[in-house]
Length: 82
Image (tube, rainbow, N blue to C red; front, side):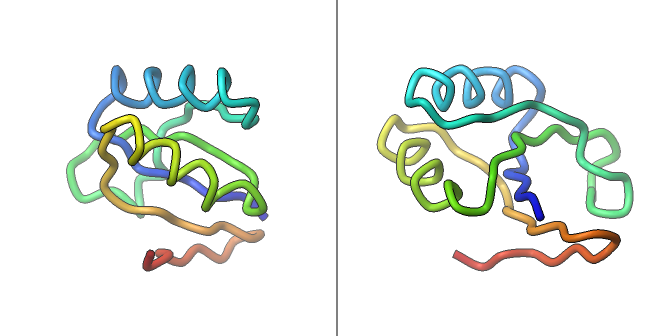
């Protein structure tokens, strides 16, 4: 299982990844799968589910924004309401 944090663009995703890396949270950037995006090409930050809440707390604390959060397990994907 993995979690994707949908970002407000590629630069935003890269900044959030760097922020999480500095906070010792393993993160990587990726494109959001096409079936999940409403705006064509969207970017996300991928994190482990056990670090999701910590990552979101750090993102908010530092004033960054994000759009939505998804949990992906196999071929199943669901939006996480936080």
